[in-house]
Length: 292
Image (tube, rainbow, N blue to C red; front, side, top):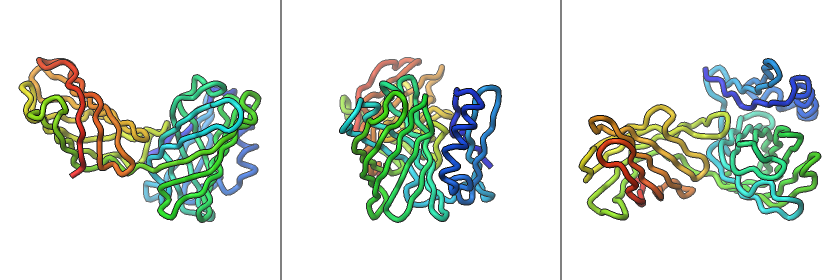
């Protein structure tokens, strides 16, 4: 049974526990999170919120669960973020509940933080997210989902001593899993060809990153013919992908493939193929890979 270390706060322990109690006393349904269990583990002067899946080894996921990109368009107040991406997990219950971890470029009152953790609820097409308090600031999202629960549209508001009153519109898109066989030739050399067999984890890490495993067949290269993604060396957050393959070249070399996918995950646009170590070091340019 895996534990998901969801949130760690550097706020003093007493403040963290008090803030947790105040927010969740108003939302009693979140305490159970359906078939899962939330608890606050306090150590020293930090607090970590941990989601323990149900006895079957994973939470009961439906609907919104997956890899999301949210776009924020401010209508009042300072811009705190324009895009956040990461993991949304929906758990069946009465009502359905959600947790999320979204990362991106956080500015102004959220500067210095790498991601924001959330909880929420789903009732029919209505979806609400509430952020945990980050440096005294909190964000709420009220949105509606489309019939396939792959798109969200709504509004957001920020409260807190720094960004109080910031608000705007938000739209979200769920990205399909980066799983399958992707093939294509290098843009700079049609004789050099990549075939990547990839598998994206269904559950992300505590900051919203999905690890990706897989292998590569590298045709037309003089130094290597294959590669394997080492543990935790492949990842996707929203549309952004980075994969590092350790090749079969004697003396070892790595090939780092960086790029982005479309929401259907059928097209992987590679912006950079960087070879490090070995006899073929250098940047090989880009490629367009399609899922077979």
